[in-house]
Length: 175
Image 1: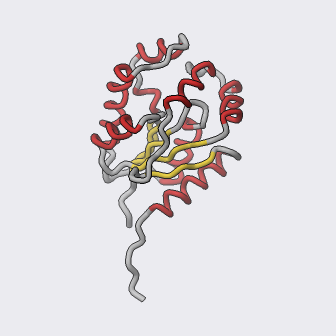
Image 2: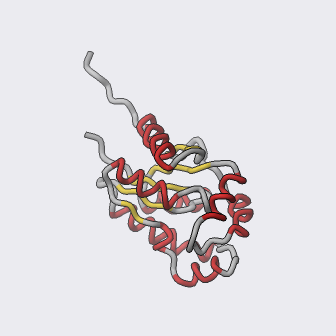
Image 3: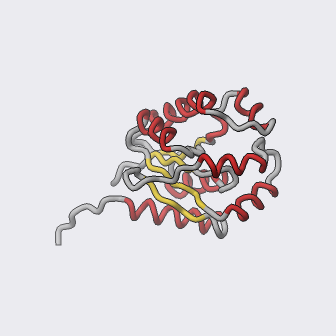
């Protein structure tokens, strides 16, 4: 039996982190934590006003997510976080070294259309350009996978599970 990963579902706003995260957690049989719930109220107010967060705004948020991930080490869990910059992912890894990332990627037009259709979210589509400008995709030395967001939530989740499974080191078999 393998030890479950703590998985961070990452990507720009509108890629479906809040939709895919709980579906992925259910498929993996682990709890889900909504990354937006870790934001202090000041961050939500800033984003609601169309003002992008800066790094100083993000550090306490990332530290809170990292603390949750650390508590789930060896138990598994899924948490959403944009984790757009390498430095943000490094900070999360410092708190929970065994985490893996699922980077939800997709066509900008598709993502913008999805953002425009969602109800009651504080992130306006006006901030999408700043999200793409900030995004630093996963590097080869980072534990994680990129998953395209085209298709249904179930199809995206299935691709994420398959990619995470393929990432697992194969154990030697006795043949």
